[in-house]
Image (cartoon, rainbow, N blue to C red; front, side, top):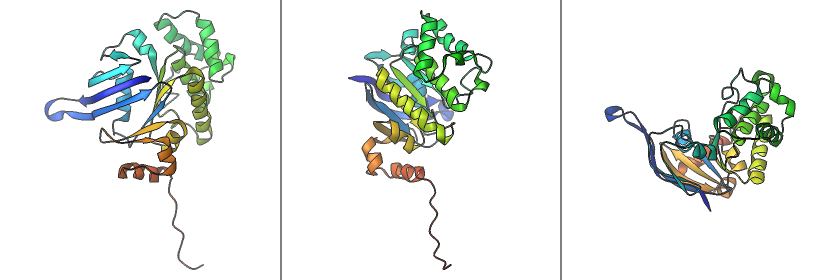
Length: 257
């Protein structure tokens, strides 16, 4: 069953001589429970696709269908609740002067949800945080704990889709795997569908079933996870990204000792 269907998506900024087309005729489908990756260099349009899906960017044309419902530029509250975002910076995306409990309560108030205390307790447990964390402020938490709070805030409205914008890139390498494994467990347990934006093919290969490689606003290749693992991708730009994700390996010196 298809959860997300995007047809001929175009996103432009400006007008006339200053018109800049950031996303150009992008189409894809994502099945229920699938994790779909978007990778590419900075400025290629991947976060812009995410913004159009989330309703943050209304300057798009084409067709978007979410859970069999056609979505317009203006969304209803129920449509917005169906898909929630997790941002790159777990400190900047959480109000610094609000307690964690207040941060989790706010979306429940906006959407008029009941059983608020029960929902907060459940979502803290779901992301592996103690209940007393609700009384703490963001500066009292580590980066990984703040990102768990950001995930909890996204989950508290019980969405079907999570839109993940570089969710581990601001974290220490030792914490990245914990967050990726948490997201993987949540997807399986809650039957969620993910779109993951990343520049790191290692992260994508860990979590995604398929990945779309973007360059200059278009998809140059859509590859299966196994293709990334085996290195059997077809487009030269995808191979460049794969080579870059392996890091710098110095050449062995040919000068005799």
